Length: 319
Image (cartoon, rainbow, N blue to C red):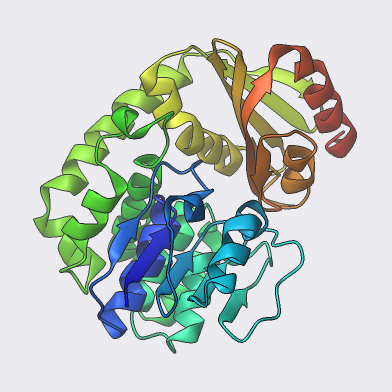
């Protein structure tokens, strides 16, 4: 019998698995990748009796390999907050899926575990740009502002590290980063003692400085767009920069685009004050997906850019 831990390489996926394995230790093959590599089940060929734990990737995007795994009599436990489509009913399938825009996979795992390692769920919530939710949980734990600031920074850094065209764009491979933080039950200790925290802090600051120099274009009264150049730093910072804009202008939606040879990579953020609609816009395009407050399109052909802009104007006209 083989075990597989299959998880998104961003803050939410890493922190969700970390919480789970702190409480339920298990030696398992790690299957992950860059944030946008969500079709991870295709990398696994399970046999009868194998157990798959899947965290923070869309069920809908993995429906075919999930069906194959269940037909092979593997057992699958799924934690996620993205649009799932129809959820299978099968004796070998256990689903913990909640698409509420004010939750994330790590918060779902936190609920499942009864808050055993809640500080890591708070890190993930900050990484997913759920600042208000994260702060409320942190204050309920009795954490001070200095501690909350560090948890927020860590979430942002872990999330930043997951963005790229491939693992070669990243500062750390996600499975390596998970392995390095897994010995730490306390995220504050990881931030204090690890070299990875400071490495990611410096790298993000440099990439954000480059992104901030790029002009912002107004699409409508309620939405703005930034087009970053075709560079590795652009691909790394696209998510963190979209989150920064969303926090700085909470009543405005944002589209951050990175040029590709065949079009654009797109990161979408609904207004923080009304975090809905981003997933519907993204799913209108063949390589799009995500959740209500934050979504993206992996490969938008240049010819489809006018349609994307029209969808944004229609969805977020502003006042």
